Amino acid sequence: MELHILEHSLKVASIEKEGIQICTHGLIKLAFLASKTRCKFFSLTETPEDYTIIVDEEGFKELPQSEHISVADATWLALNVVSGGGNASNSQPIGVTKIAKSVIAPLADHNISVFMLSTYQTDYILVRERDLPMVMHTLSSEFTLLRVVNGETVAAHNLGVTNGFVKPKLVPRPIIHPLSSPSNMFCVTSLDPDTLPSVATLLMDVMFYSGGSKECGAFGEDSSHIRFFSFSLIEGYISLVMDEQTTQRFPNNVLFTSASGELWKMVRIGGQPLGFDECGIVAQISEPLATADIPAYYISTFKFDHALVPEENIQSVIGALRTESTTQ
Image (tube, rainbow, N blue to C red; front, side):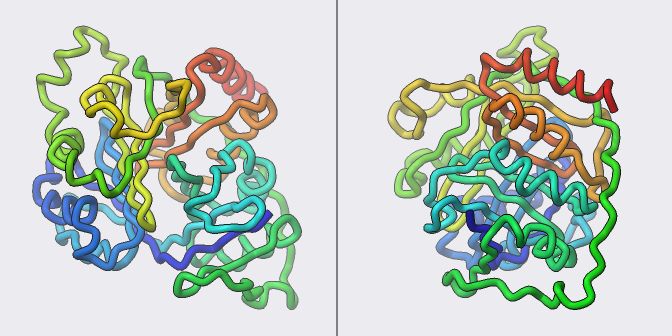
């Protein structure tokens, strides 16, 4: 398989809920008027705590400076595993569990922190730019390493990691974090960018204005229902993750869904904000799922991590992960 190192230099940031109004203009421009910007990589995910943004440096310029915005203190690069060659964004998704043992676990074992973004099209593994030499050293035996430069895929240079490079000792994995599973059922879907204008008003309402009392009241006393919505526009491809009720607000035949209408349940990882320096969280979730051959999407946010697994697998997944944590 090939590992593509994409050309985007990315920022990961958090916008506080109370500060979203000052960022709305820039975010709407990035999501709906991408042709007016030079941004090629944009993702916005709302959780109960905040909004997490992953955006390239051109897109970051569209956001105001504000005390309500916290930016992770690193530049990130996106890696993409491609099976059988081809363009990363229009290939069939490999799935996070399929790369658990070949990418995620080896990076965790070498103390390299990752930030995951699964989309409808593919899975992006974000690593700090400063960690790239170690990443390449760690994965070069398993993958053909390629870099994307000006849209063209070329062989990746070894960045000097083969000369006098000391192989690090494997590090122990940390104890797994607390898990919870909200009551929502989620859809992972997409839409044709050409249809985006026809649902732009609805999408803006879902992104920025639907967290008020009318939505909370729709679920009665269900306190385990959480607010979660993710929108990504990456190299022209749109990906959406939203709960089943939100999906029903969209017109028929606008969203791409599988013939089975597959629904996903969420496992939320973290009892408190996780931070960016801890390693192995994604590995500890994805490895047991890979062993059980359970597909999953994985979305990291600024404070918590989220795995989506098929609805019918949720109980066995939670059981397997909790068993894993007690054996640490």
